[in-house]
Length: 309
Figure (cartoon, rainbow, N blue to C red):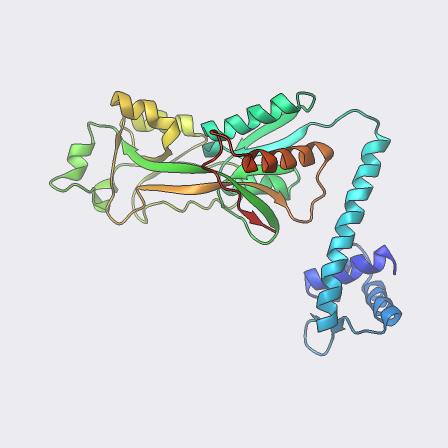
């Protein structure tokens, strides 16, 4: 059994055809077919059923594929370690992407605690928004991301690291007019007032909490969003920790919109790609956060660890 044979077999399964596998790993289609046949011949089993339009895994193939993935991941990790050792002892920076909305006090405490334990590890911290956070992983701009569940699927391994509370707010002078005679604001009353949204680098932004009709303004960050809402130029859903002072000082007020998720809480996750080999620095961060969250302290006892392996 050779690694090239395993890579060919895995590519066929993941890409769905011999042709697509050949293109994905830059091999010829006959060489891919020969590699898979060599594996089958070596063990005397059929890994792929070729009778249908697309090759599908047999029962034996499913078990073999699962172990092949594990083995190839270990090989990739070993190769990465070898390259790292060959470069000497100089450490690389930890490349971390955090959702703009996710820099809560709890997440900042995690970063501060990691820095205190690993002061020798430099951090390249990038912020993005919505699907842009996951794109940093896919495009290998970052090794680990922290943010909400936008874009998460079977490609990812993720751990719950905190909670985020969101609430709808508007300038206090606008609320009485918008409410009219009812406690909740009807959606129609907001159509002429822009909903302020943050949009960043992702190619396909996935805004979940948007009125189907009405004006919209797009800005690059939450500070601009907050500034415009406080000026009475629109309304928005904002992370509560960002507007806590403004609510207490009366510069903003909470707003309940009819048939709309005006106030909600959702989990934040630490995320990595399932098949990506992490650098030693990223591994140190991943292990530290897992250990920190499992330690019963006053700072983190409210945050349970939720694994999806």
